[in-house]
Length: 168
Image 1: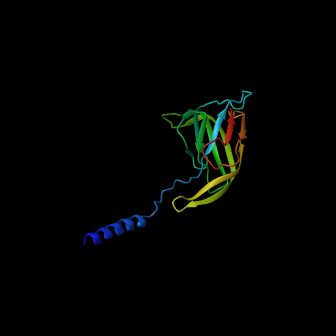
Image 2: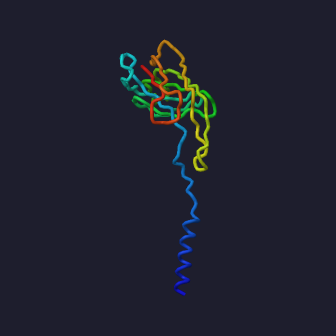
Image 3: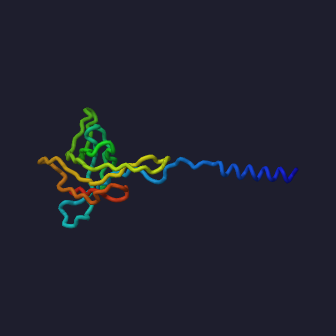
C-alpha cells in the first residue's frame, strides 16, 4: 500500500509540473519612444549638452502635454503608430498663469515623419511598432528658440539612445 501511495504521489508531482502553462508576461519588447536631446547651438562642439529651461512638449492634434514643465537636456516621448506624422509644440520657458490658466512661453513646432513597421513579438506582447526613415520639419518663425535639428538615427527601434539632436 505504501508503495502504491508513493508511486501515486510521484505521478501527481510530475503531472503538476508538466501541466503548468507559460505565463503571459511580456518581457521581450515594447514600442520604442522617440528620444530628443538638447545641445548648445553656439558651441563648435556638437556634443555640448544644453538644458532647456521649463520645457513643455504637447502633441498638437490632441492638445495634451506629455510632460510636466521641467528643465532637461533630453526627453523621451511616444509618437503615433496609426499615422506617419506626429506634430509637437516644444515650449521653452513655459508657465501657466494660475488665474487664467493661460500657457505662455516660446513655442517651436516640429513635425516628425516616419514609416511605421509593425512586428509580432509573441502572444503575451502582441505587436510592437518600430519607426523607420525618421525625418523632421519645423515651422520657422522670427522668435524661434530652436536653431538647428539633426537626425542621429533614422530608425527608432530602441529607447536607449538619442534619435534627434535639437540645437538651441
